[in-house]
Image 1 (cartoon, rainbow over the protein chains, first blue to last red):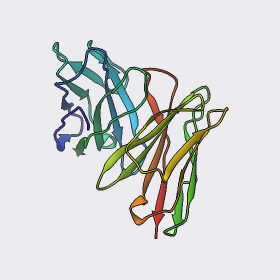
Image 2 (cartoon, rainbow over the protein chains, first blue to last red):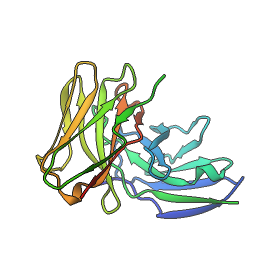
Image 3 (cartoon, rainbow over the protein chains, first blue to last red):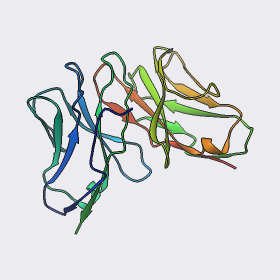
Image 4 (cartoon, one colour):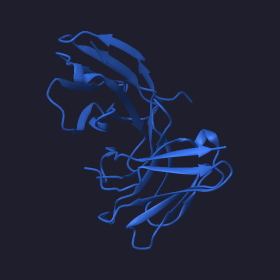
Length: 111
Length: 112
């Protein structure tokens, strides 16, 4: 079973920041938080990952709480092309690339 | 560099037949994983290969099998197809521990 909980859907106005929350209260000390997104019928696309520090790349920022029980993915200026299902994933084991996907958050960006 | 390539993109098979799907990982990646995506069950892990060895397996029946070749290319096979096997099958490759996995565009299998 997935170790994360996400809201099923969210809306965001184009040009505004999209903040997608994720709860992972049972995360272990050596488990990373990964975010992927899937645009309709395409393969999931990697966005960002982190262990305990906040991370930023050209696509998004990842804020992880100090107790690591939750995190937030931030898309600073959402566009219509960011409409997708966003998955928050906790890597199950250190020595495997296995990903356990939950149901994700369907983000709808509107004009 | 080229991404993960899956072939074929679309496939229609009849119940009882078998099917083989192919995945070519990103050059230099030695880890390949397979996933099944259906509307009802979402994205589910099938299996993972690293250096020609199966490293992990999901909760699927023995009709689902896979292998990895010395050049890291991977194939998965589904025998005795059932209607419920209709799905998008996704392959992902990774360059190492705790690095991101890159997904292909998938093979959409329809069983009739």
